[in-house]
Length: 276
Image (tube, rainbow, N blue to C red; front, side):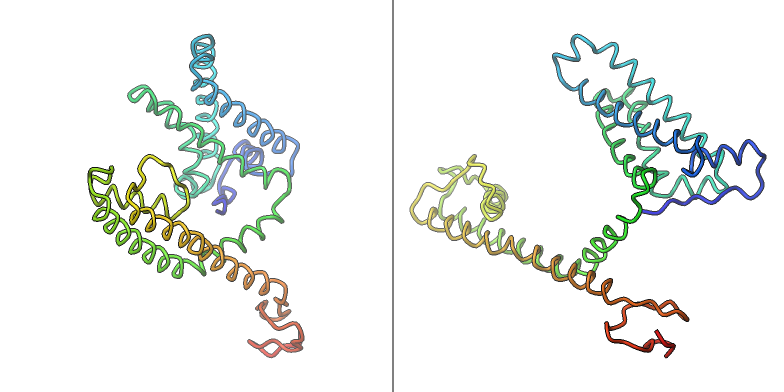
């Protein structure tokens, strides 16, 4: 999630000033621009949430509607200014932040056709991730990168685990369908698989449950199995996260080739043989 924002190469002085104000935080105007933007995002999300409450909508619906459109127009102008000030507007528009900025304004316009789509405006809350840049909290991004690295490293194991779980719920769902039957609420195998998923994950909605002794024994077995299964993905990610943290802890950077990941007692770089 990196900003794709390079200063325009051929720009007038006002365009350069606009870029520094919108994308940089080192200037007084830039810092206040980001702070006001964050406040606007928070208030706009609160407005959307309050508008979903029937009693508040009945009394203050008109005001909330005006505020909602006011924030949308404000963010629309901001989005256009970002595209104007950036050197490569298309590249920014297709970047992570560019897409999020666009999604922050589209639902209001779509609501003219599909009324309830305006509640998708809560996606604006994602824009608060800009506080990492505004409040100089970028050092925490390295911790987030470790977590992402652990998730990526464990994705193949997680996929295998999910296929195994999918196989189990299909088997248990089919068995409970045979054991209980339609008279006890298990009207089809897909509905029985739904029960198996709810039971295996220990959620237990209770909207459908076995009535026979054999069915209850099977349910008890699935519940117990669920506790052990839920620990598997946690363990997989934890192991990969430990590896990522260990790599960071032992990752001396080579002064010549900048390679990392050396052992704690390493004296020479294992890639270029330079002295560490």
